Image 1 (cartoon, rainbow, N blue to C red):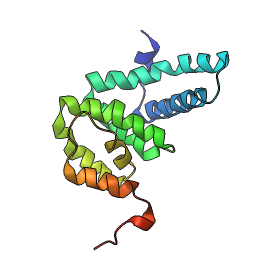
Image 2: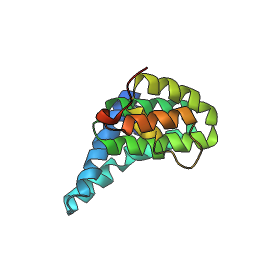
Image 3: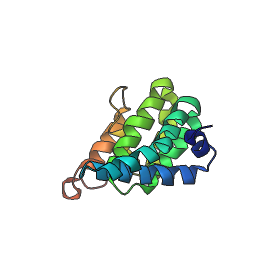
Image 4: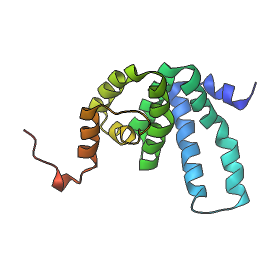
Length: 145
């Protein structure tokens, strides 16, 4: 059994926390380059592989993990990863997931940033508009009806 399988046996909350840590370690690698940083990235690969495995083999859990990452995201790059690596890949196989994604986005507007990264399949018009409203600076937003 490899480390990916160990991550898959953990709770969604633990998986999300590990993924977030791995994301920050890799993000720091883009600002500096040294052998220790590469080692840390290599050590955190299994958690990323676990999330990708869920996308292929357990879409319901992958969607929940993606939602949890978006709820706790403290960097735009995390939301971009959720959109491209989780939502887009899941939606390619099952476009009916838009319903669950829409419900989650209503409760967690940060998910709109992830939705805006989906480009390989059509995004429902109302969600696309909601994403653009979310991205618009607050001073430029039209007043609520």
